Each structure stands twice: as structure tokens, then as C-alpha cells.
Image 1: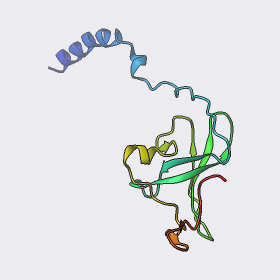
Image 2: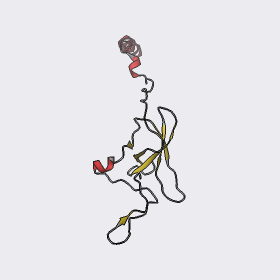
Image 3: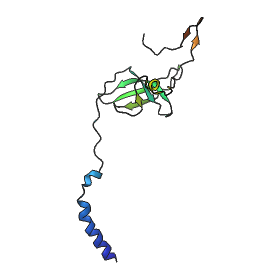
Image 4: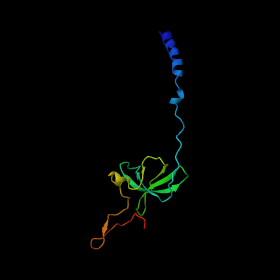
Amino acid sequence: MLKNGVQTVAKLIPFTMSFNMLAFVPQDHADLRSHFFTVGMKLETVNMSEPFHICPASVTKVFNNHFFQVTIDDLRPEPNKLSMLCHADSLGILPVQWCLKNGVNLTPPKGLYPVEICGVGMIQASVSLSPN
């Protein structure tokens, strides 16, 4: 019985060798696209520590034309900086206003206080995120 099993396996070996075995071997990583991010650019990103929240974030460091650092905005006096290394095709980084255009809630930055009413009918936010 064992002899027949060995003969069967021996007959299968040439068949399996006819397949391209390299197709099953992991290949090198895909080439990364160059990015055009600069320090200070704003974006929206999935919070790694709270993955159901999308938060405003900033590019805080550019390492080279492939990698950059994104830090979730935190406006508290002693912020807890949450940063991640990204590339142009990183999952979880989104353009500004992506949440607005897609009907998804954007989690405000920690430390952003509620809108204050200043005078009659005038509303002013404690912190403005728009450029002057």
C-alpha cells in the first residue's frame, strides 16, 4: 500500500512542477508613488487609536518623496500627539472635506471648545481652522 502511495506522489511531482511555482512566492513590494505633501498641509485621517473616528490632521514631517508623517490635530494645552508614517497610497488618509462630502461625521480635534455666542446674533468659534 505504501509503495503505491509513493508511486502516486512520484507521478504527481512532474505535474506540479509544470506550474509556475514563483507565482505563489511573495514578490517584492510594489513601487511607491511619489507624494506632493508639504509640512503644514491639512487632511482628514482615521484615528488609529479610535478607528471609528475620522479626525482633522496635519502633515508634520516629510522624510523623502515617498514617506511623510501625519499627526492628528490636538488643541489641548498639553497635547497627546498621535502620529503615523504614511505614503501617497496609505489607507486612512483623506482629503480635507471628505467627511462633509460623504456625509460622515468628522470628530473635532481634542481641545476645540464649543462655539461661543459673542454679542447679538454673532457666533465665534474659540479656534479657527481656516487660513486668514
